[in-house]
Image (cartoon, rainbow, N blue to C red; front, side):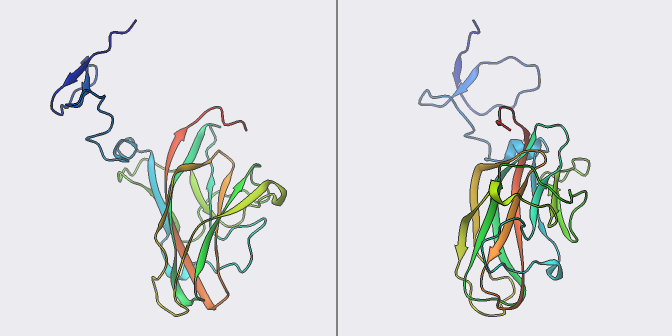
Length: 223
């Protein structure tokens, strides 16, 4: 049996392969992520990504009814290993890029129990991009921003993740806070997270949003 012991002491930085006792707090409990920020290790390992709209003119129009088979700007998992999943941390928006919004908006996401059908994405939609949070140029995401993949209506549920109280005005940038998901939404390979802003039509408003997610291999998803 492995002999696991704890040490009450200061923060220490250890090299790979160095055996040491497990650090404990001054109250004797195991020190679990008390000195690291919550996304630090994911980012350092090149497993955390941000993405969203980069150009106002490439924003998407609101929907005036709950979606069924299509989202406005979806996050598609193009991983080919069958294991690497997109684990959603937060979704920020919708924010108004241009036009005149109607009062109030609700962000809906589509959760599907079937892989995407129709045209399968192979590249990001125009001016929607993603980047590794640690700035590593050689760490590419498996996620693609897309508006062409089709959801199977009978196997997809659309849920609200939050609303804002935007004004019925042409206030560029107005929108809502980030909606924290805490990893509660997992997108397996071949699936997508549908995203759409539900609001009245307004006068030609275009919206954007941003998402933060981790990419990790997961098993036993029951797919």
